[in-house]
Length: 549
Image 1 (cartoon, rainbow, N blue to C red):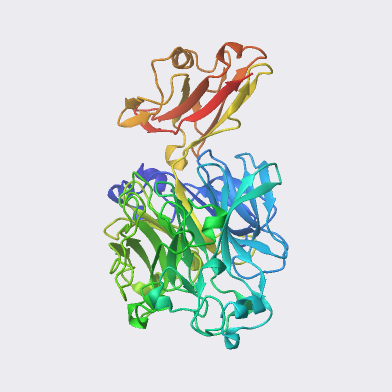
Image 2: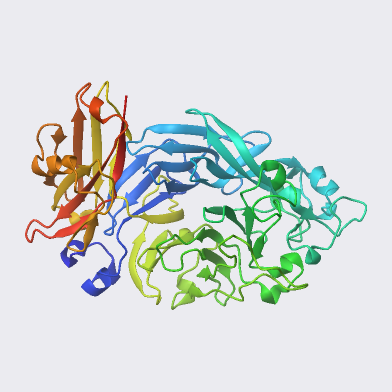
């Protein structure tokens, strides 16, 4: 990064080149809670792209691996508790909605978060709208009920089948795994301290507004073990469940990779919720955003979360990193009688030097970045910032964009994608134009960009000035694009980025021209070049497009 490009951005801690070099590359994605627009901002706080939608988020947004935006949204429905949504949409780079699915009916209401699984299905948190009598008949103390609704959570997997349709292929229900010691004549009677895999239907003690029992506010998926982590703030716990089960197995206590059905494999944060500790042992306080740290980032496989209401004085927020407790097969250590799940505490945490200055009692999240830094969204403060592993703040951004006076931000994520394409399929028969959109951010404004491609895949890559262009350069197509920029089928493949570091290139195939390439996949990528030194300053991700008949 160049210090001159940081001037006047209000990012005081970026004033020195040394600190600037510590900021992780990429763009920051977020959607304010009271705004219909999802934004991408660069390190200077400039909006470099936005998706203008018609509904408020409900409340999470994600950028999928193919560059598609997965966005929850608010739709009219029977429940409007904080975090309500009811709809999930997939949105292309140009704002085209490619999937618009509603789950808001008398029985099920999507809320808080949805995410795309590796198989392309969508996992979402859902309120199951039951009658309070169903809770009482399952052992809930009637004195701890209000109104007519009982809203336990379920985790539901939907397979998209059309632009507005989808089929449910898997469901886990909290109500299938309850235990109670209130009434021996009712089902599920037992002692939760003897069954930490079960959920005490009478926890937390006290009546619940609108019957919302759990208020699950975040999920993440670990492909290595096929497990899901859930944040359950009303219990002040995170839970891990087995996704490898069938729906029938998820309703019981056998089956799946771990042989335990849908019972809780792991829980952490508040052992008094399962009679294996006291209030003094509680470590989580209305937490949000548990995530498995990505492979390639320091702490990979560990859990990172935002701990919202840590007692003081003053009350404040902290970021916790928890060591992974399960082995490579996904198995967790067996517990001795009376023993809670480990670890004893976080392996890493962040608290502000002045604790009260970093405090968000609700929403919020954190993300471990590949360079070891952690991106933090203190949502109630509309504040997104990045800290090193030593706790030094190296970047910050205050959200001022919202369609109402509120600027709350549920979560923010850093993405390293700088190349999008308008299609991943080329028709050899009809031809067409592939549009490649480049976004690097204002740090690269005015630099030269050069787009190239390869039929030979993304390896071994070409290392230039310490950056890797993810293409196989021993390829005739690469040589043609390299030697013939801005000519023939290649439009604006060489040019200058605009002041925000953006550019657009095209590749056009006339009808029938692609017939010899049917079945082949082309990858495109680009590099930014300093026009004064001719040094490469960054390289992009590779975008595939497959030629079909």
